[in-house]
Image (cartoon, rainbow, N blue to C red; front, top):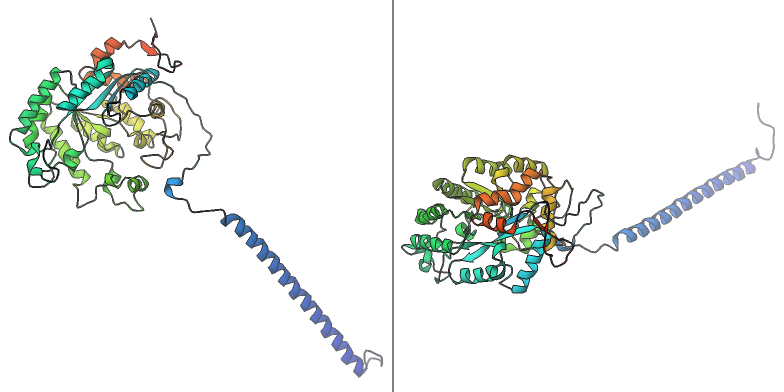
Length: 438
């Protein structure tokens, strides 16, 4: 059945109707297109605005400028002086103070404020420097300082001609043994050997002098006979012997101080230096050796522990190494408890007061993630450290008791200084001794 005739069924009406339908579709499509275009414009404008806001204010940052402020909220202990009297067995009063009298007086006042009873200077090179150093430290403060002497291996020889160095001349070691005996009569307490012995000293043929070279055995034997301990700095941190590249954790430090780097092919390897040092320790069991800077193995305390177990004539000290020890607090604490009789206190100072207080905090507290140095940029690794909270009986050994046993002159000075004395930390000049206890 067909629809009745009408407007919409008229042929012309069909054409018109179709036109209306097509026009409606076109309008809808046009509206949809405009909506999409408008959305894209709005989205692009928003993203561009966001991009500009986040990227424009960000200039490049160099490593030296990167000083992040930790957001941690943890306990912080303000320790203004050591809990027990301290004997600092590793300091450099010629290298750092250049015999400036005012600086020395300021340092003594700082010692008083921080309960530092004695300081050992390692800068008394045999000869005129020893005379000057004795006068500098002992003229007014003999009861507060001890001195270790040094050996001048080159003498008046030419730097670029090892054949002229005094250490390569006949009879050198015996002459040094005699001078060490004479230095002891003047009150010297030990011998310091710098890292140049192994990393700089050379034989007459230009090769590096080996640390256990038998030519120098009379020196170490004499120290044993005289009761003079030998503090020996051998090699350096392991990173200093690795390539300065993206994998080196001391990259920033070595980029600032490239002269501290010992590349392979130009210098002996670190393991070779340590092996020669250990042979020397074994060869002279009657001589007491102090392995400076935790034997330069503070990154590997298992190795340091083996060193102490194999060589009963060796002790260690941790000058400039709380940066390493403090980032492994559990392992460090275990080590200090296990080897509490074999560890001496040292700092590598004199330093600003804040540096010493970082040492007290490291040894005496459970504080977390604090700066080991007063410098804005950490000087020995871009990290922070944790306290190891040692018990009092261990603290006393580390701070002074082990030094009494190992280093001549410590006991006499401590007896004179009186272990019951502390200094009034409220007095900016250090104050006078205040008695604690009966």
